Amino acid sequence: MNPMIRERVLIEVRAVLDEEREGIRRLIRDVLREELQRLIREELDNELQEYISEPGAVLAPAVDVKTVAMPPEPEAVPPSAAEVVDEPVPNESCREPGDAEGMYLYGIIRGGMDFEFGPMGIEGEVVYVLQGGEVGAVVHDCSARPYESSDEETVKRWLLAHQNVIDQAWKQYGVVIPTAFDTIIAAEEGRTPEETLKAWLDDTREDFMAKLDKFTAKAEYGVQVFWDAPAMMETISRENDAVRKLTADIQAKSKGSAYLLRQKLETVMKKELETKADHYFREFYQSIKGCASEVKIEKTKKLEDPARQMIMNLACLLPREESKVLGLELERIHEMACFFVRYTGPWPPYSFA
Image 1 (cartoon, rainbow, N blue to C red):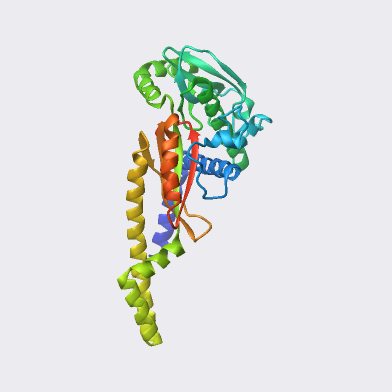
Image 2: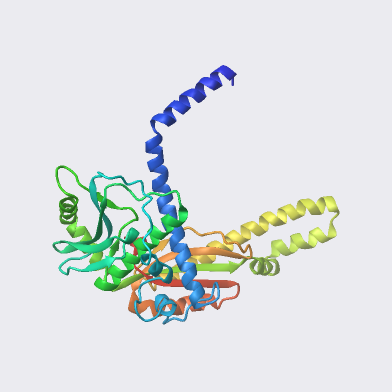
């Protein structure tokens, strides 16, 4: 590209970026917020798993993760989340005096019973229930600006406090519709945040009631299935005719020919691994689906140990009293050669809300 044209293009690009900087920041923040929530959920899963068993070990069918990880009371609070209410974090969310007031929303519960959770919210804010007829909202009073910080530890504490409140609401009311981190109801059209929130609860009452009915007496359970990749490749090497033939040919050929055959063998092995992963995914998915009311497929994650690969990551919604049935099915999979299962829960229905 002509240098003068290139310089002109760069000037125009910078101008566009300057004009849309705030919108780009909001977009990036929204994307990162969802990713941060996912990372915190993973960290909590890992913490709970360390309390219970060695990594990859399946829980006994009747085990309730949080019951094992914590003393009997309070049952629903993850250990790391319980710590965040001890020392409120200094406000780093760019709030300023004179900001419009708002209400921070943690989740939706059935209405009719007032309850104050106390100073356990983000930054030690007092959490309480705002009644809206048949449904209620778990909230704390705040400004209308989002919680933002460049410090990852601060954001992590906010996220853990958010989850801790949801867990407590779940325990107190038996059912909760969790909302995303940083959901803030602001004043609008001459109405206060409280009036705005109550109007929204009233407008969406039927939808909320349907979800609350759906989630009553149910919980979310996380299911991750891993396999031992080297062991699976050894199995393929023994059982697959094409792989056995290529392996024999490599040993009989010259270095140049053997190199080409090894590349072909690598391609065949990769394809066979993908085929087996797809086969087992379908098989396990059908058996697990039969134990749950609803199943959501999540993205698999890459582990530090290259020998252990995740081939399935599911969120399962089911009645808590039926978790034993799911546990039995997962133990069956865990006992299969080359496979490992991680089973966590019960959780409020984050993935289904």
